[in-house]
Image (cartoon, rainbow, N blue to C red):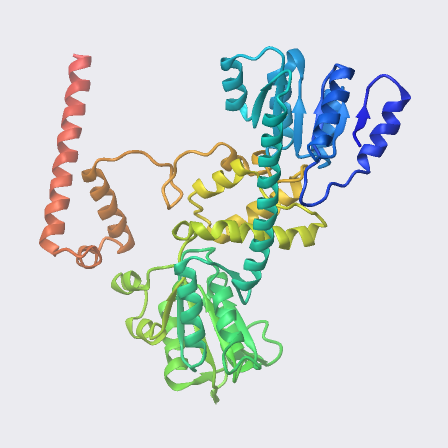
Amino acid sequence: MAYALLADTSHMAHAYTKAAEIVAPTSTLTPCILDDDPAQLESLGALVEELGYPSILTSDPEEALRCVRYGRSRVLLADPGVHGYEFLDRALRTDPGVHVLVMTGQYTLDSALEAIRRGATDFLPKPIDRQRLKRTLDEVAALHDQRRRVRSLEEQLLKDLEFHGIVGKSPAMLEVFDFARKVARHYTNVLVTGPTGTGKELVARAIHQISPVSSHRLAVCNCSAMVDSLLESQLFGHVRGAFTGATDTRPGLFEYADGGTVFLDEVGETSLAMQSKLLRVIQNREIQRVGSPEVKQINVRLIAATNRDLRAEVLAGRFREDLFYRLSSIQIRIPSLSERLEDIPLLVQFFLKKYNDAYGKKIPGLTRRTQAVLLQHPWPGNVRELENVISSACITASGDFIDLADLPENLQHRAPRTPQGDPWRPLALDEIRKLHIQRVLDLCQGNRLRAAQVLGIGRTSLYRYLKRDEQERGATERDRHGKSGGATA
């Protein structure tokens, strides 16, 4: 039975209330039909019902948009009259996933192509051809059911592919999961590397949870957040009176986690003096509280993480080589999000579920154009950045699906960017070489021997490149000054 929503009598309000109560079966659609001709409206409603679909009828464009906005209909058969394209644009802004079938008595090929270009699913000339309408509605219903089944399968896949709070189905992440399982069986030191925001701490926690010492404590320390004196006290503990403010004796994290695991995040940020103390812990399995002569034996598994290239840090003299080899006997590299773009849909679903629960929302997914934007973004902040985007979008989203307007400004108006997040511009190969050499020299604090080792070239080759660059810069400066001098003469 079709429900009419006609805009001139109290019957409209009653009918609209009944229409609002319609709940379409999960395997079917409820088309909303918009036409300002009551006779046409009733005729179309009867035809759609004969084809096996319940329908909502209205002669008011605003009522039709409300049906779309509140999810009562995902298919709109509309003859919007003179406001055709404007109404189509409004409907797609309300829900970019809605299927709009534009109906008109003035069909032309150009108008049909324009409607399709603007996002219409089909453009139907009046009088409506029964077979064509049936084929179009059946195709939309099949697509709707397919998406529903895919969403159900993705939910099951999400459960199967979650590894102790980490989500991934890409070969790179499956390799990380497999290697972490193997490493966790053995009591050894592990170095977890990867860019900021990739989930290094989650991997460390997963290794602890599936290790033989999972019943013992996991102590976490962010080495970049403390100065040396505070970090030493945090890790090794102190006795009363050891320094100003030490009013009592406290154990450090190594004692606290004795028998378990200590996770040192951003270990590459520690000073050389602190590195020597960490080396003693690893070699001798003993610690000494600040201000105490007593040496305590400990038995801990050490997991360290860094976003730095520790090999380059060793060459630059900022990280102890012996400590590096002690830590990196087992090394797990976490790939950046740009290296595993196929994981983004799964991660989006994971974060949607997390923040739907947190904020009391029921957002089922993202619009297609929003998904496309997320797949094209370089993600310099990696998984942490993606999580922040989904979290904020869940708060601001007003529709059923997250759309472009719900994303941060930088994603709505994105420009090409490099994987490092810098604005991209085309460069000649010589310019790229100069830029890379300069960055490596900065990393090595101007030490040309170490820079040549990092670059994988001989010292003579590096000197030759630098000399050539200096000559080119000198020639450019002379040309510039010559031109300016000629202009003022």
